[in-house]
Length: 78
Image (tube, rainbow, N blue to C red; front, top):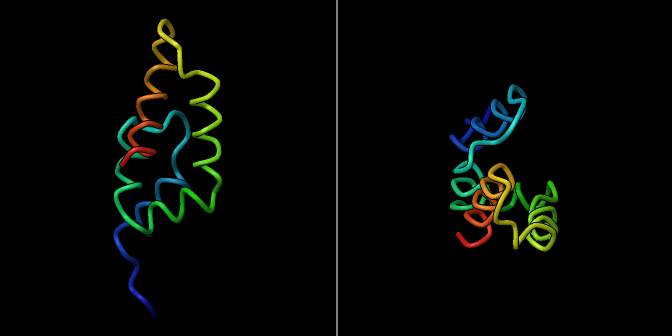
């Protein structure tokens, strides 16, 4: 039996048990590793990210949208 890497463990336990808004740094941390980027790509997150940036890139009032933009930008530019 293969040992799970820390990232695999974190992804399976977080994805299975998490409900709600992802912490702002989560995507940025995932995008720091090759495995994290692969998971984000395979799950379609980067496509979702680019769409969200195009749709809300000029937002300057809604704090929730701004927080999500920051989270997405950390992932995309990392």
